[in-house]
Length: 171
Image (cartoon, rainbow, N blue to C red; front, side):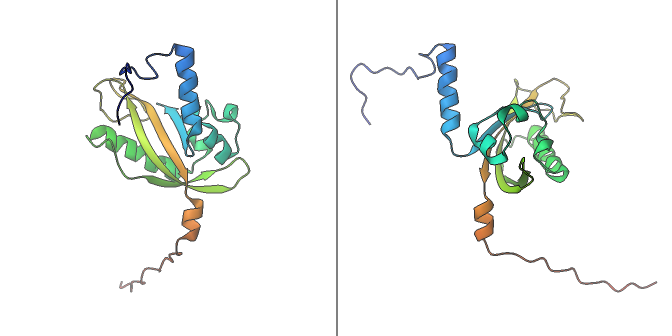
């Protein structure tokens, strides 16, 4: 693709003042069909886009400052925390999507897929201690992209669990 005569390499963020850049960012984030959120190091919502609000049925003000546990089961929280610790202790920033069920404000569940990114300040990569802290304060939280996969899961053939064969017990 050829550039127009006189076009420069300045991007749209550099030429905007702070309020204008923030507005552009908000427009971009809210135009994405998937949910986008940011959690702080303690797992509380710092930012959510319109899709998260629509998916969950909670108002933005009801989510901001609240822990992710508002929407997740304890098992899913523990699984995501383990993944965060694994990524912080290794050099593998990317991984497969994490599936979980989100709880909506009206008590329904939505099957979701999460692409998780870590916010790490500087070169720190130590896994968080209990409560999300690192020794050097490097871990700052997470940013995630959440996709509603309820329809996909309903369309997939149902897998049935088979019971494990009973073992004979010999005393």
